[in-house]
Amino acid sequence: MSKNIYLVLHDFTPVGDAALKYAVALSSNLTNEIKLVNLVADKKEVDASTSKLNEIISNIKPGPNTEITSLVRVGSIFDDVAKIVKEEKANLIIMGTHGSKGFQKIFGSYAMKVITSSDIPFFVIQQETEAKPVKRILVPIDLEKESLQIVHIAGDLAKMYDAEVYVVAEKHDDVLLSQRIKNRILIVRNQYEERNIKCTIELIKGSGSYATKIMAFSMEQNIDLIAFAYHTSSLLPQFDTFAQSLIMNKELLPCVIVNSKLSSSISY
Image (cartoon, rainbow, N blue to C red; front, side, top):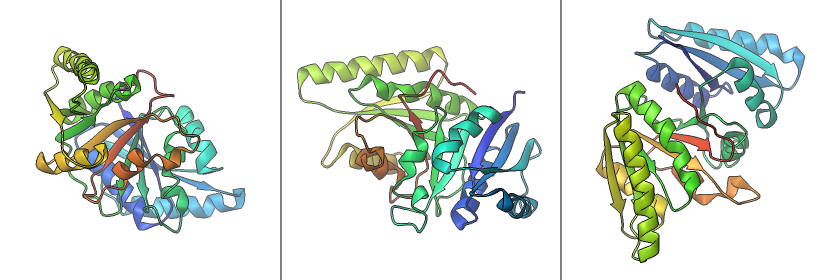
């Protein structure tokens, strides 16, 4: 069985503990290596940070096929996460967010800046997110072709966790827009049928923003995970309200995000 490598970003706060707990839950029935990562500003801090990480690891009981190791690097979370991903050949990054008003803004309103720095999926949770099996994955798509970049990754996750995928799109009254969405849906349906992935397609409507509709649907269908592609023309991606509102959803659902501009065909 091939081994997956998960990087868990830890900042020695309860949010980092929550991210590690979720990584362990995701790995319960898989052959995984979890690398607990901390970034420091100076070489003098490496030994102390390594000791702290190892102490955290000593109190965790992973599954029989999961190994947890520590990794401390000198650098910046904004500049060096992507480098670590390549060096460690990681499949997934798991991080927690303090919320939009945390004392460490890099895990709050600037989370998108970190997420968009790498071409592999980011698994983002909130401190109170419950660590539980992933059985229902929601995949929102839109009129932009970049939104389909998440489809293959969500399919990989569905295969890995024996989960069902719910693909949603906004219902449009305009004939041309409606047809474009139907074409997108057909592409997704065909791909999942070829891979024998259980899939439900739904056009959602209602009041409010697309993100609001997504969350309402998630609650109705008991969704465990939201997976979406990040694509924006904004010069400051941290101000992308759609992505931010999903990441910081009040229902505390975890999100998997991939940067559609950087992602390639990634499989587990």
